[in-house]
Length: 57
Image (cartoon, rainbow, N blue to C red; front, side):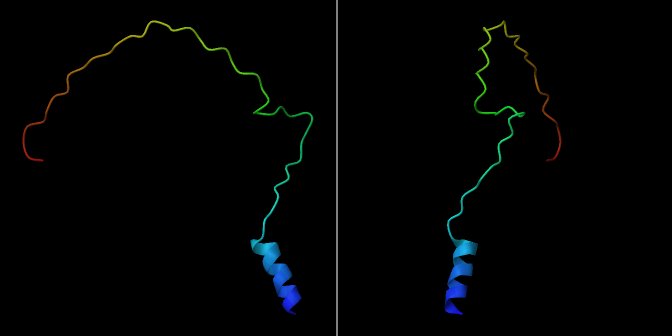
């Protein structure tokens, strides 16, 4: 009985190994080559003035 409890406790709370099945038809996210870094483009600066409301908060 005690051995069974220890086995089940180990099974429930012990170390586990995640195994992920691999599919040859699906591409891997982490093995993909990196995309080229785009050159810096002109950045448009947008400015605005915020109106403060008058009255109570």
